[in-house]
Length: 498
Length: 116
Image 1 (spheres, each protein chain N blue to C red):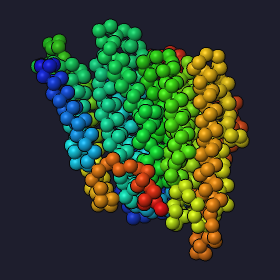
Image 2 (image 1 turned 30 degrees about the vertical axis):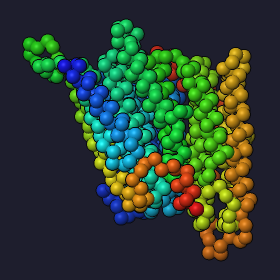
Image 3 (image 1 turned 120 degrees about the horizontal axis):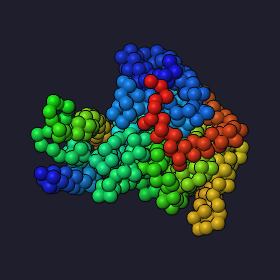
Image 4 (image 1 turned 90 degrees about the horizontal axis):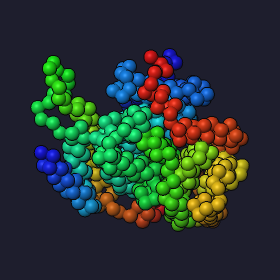
């Protein structure tokens, strides 16, 4: 059983989605039961995986027992397993919100949700970059389905744009994969790491062109400036529960970039990304200041958090990279909380929806206002939630001397202030400028959504409490990325499990 | 032969990108199809072109074609085919629900019009 652990996060949602498609077309209750059973199984497997790799073990799973590099390998190490655990937990929490209305808004919500999770798990666990492409596509196809779930004109036109952008991204992905394969003759990250130094000088140009093209694709998925334009409209109009899960999708791009550039190409550091990270921060913060709806605001806040994340990833030292990864987990939870909240407000205000304007009073205003307050604290990075710890740990790991370090400090701090302004403006308009009485017949916010929100806040609080072991864990994970010798050895050398 | 392939892929890519820039649904769908043809050909030649060489082991043969890109291109064809079908379905729904054939509708103005 233990030997098959790394493949289970991909198999469980795949099987449960297939069963759901076959059995639960009409029966939403059965679909829910299956969805929660699947979520529980995913969390269980993720915890078992975590227990197996937390001491630094690297599990390699060869599908069909074909030897690397000929076959397909799944690799579970500290970083990928932590992200699998995050995905499983977020997926389970968001199921609660789906109960309120979304899974009845159209057919096949739950199978799409499971396929979405399957693609994300696969992208985190895969050991080669062609299967990374395949899992990206699984993830994207499911996300197209979730994005148009429930229909509506604005949602459909924005989904079209999202889809066209991502199809062009997929095209670039394939071009890049073929270039790298042409020069290096392998698709496996670990095998690539071994082969890069031996690529003849005449082919190095092709290799690096392909490698950089692949990095551009990952930056597009991660929505780093100047490739961020697709995100706010698409996420801002997606169904709330889907948008909250999409908060994780851009992190998959960041993860793939780390895995490919640091392990596969062995670049050692990504310092070139630092100016892009500053611009991403700025674009996100300015967008939050100007956002017309809470959904779009949550989208821009996600972009800003990607900026913070990339300030961390641009470092060549393990503590800085580790702090960035710690912040990655926080920003996923914070982004999800904002999207869930925007969705609840949209449902509560019949006329204004989630537009950032005052309007008629609505049921559950105090509750949602309090929720928005906490979500804003999380997004800005104020205590007592984990964003504060993440930003402090990140800033402490960046030396202020020298232009780049000082600029990073300045951008992180100034944009935090801009975020604070933007979120205060939005919150006071939506929640304090409400006039009159709430309509008598109006019901309060859906219990499932409120429960999901509460769990997200609890998770961020716990994440702040657990900061010390978590930072140590991610610093070790970052060390493994910067010095991928053990990973390469585990995947290409003698197998851990035969 | 390499030259012929390069010109072919280049022409398909250029045409595809041009069509994608037209910002109307139908040309964009066509453009993405052309782009995916270009990609498929590109993936296909990633293992370098060779004539009359078998892709799997045979007795007494020393020159082999790389079999992997052929497997990759199959996957890529299936995925791009599915994606195009999905895009067309989505385009038809968007056409009927939004009455729009353009895909560059500014998301923000639409949001304020319809969300209120």
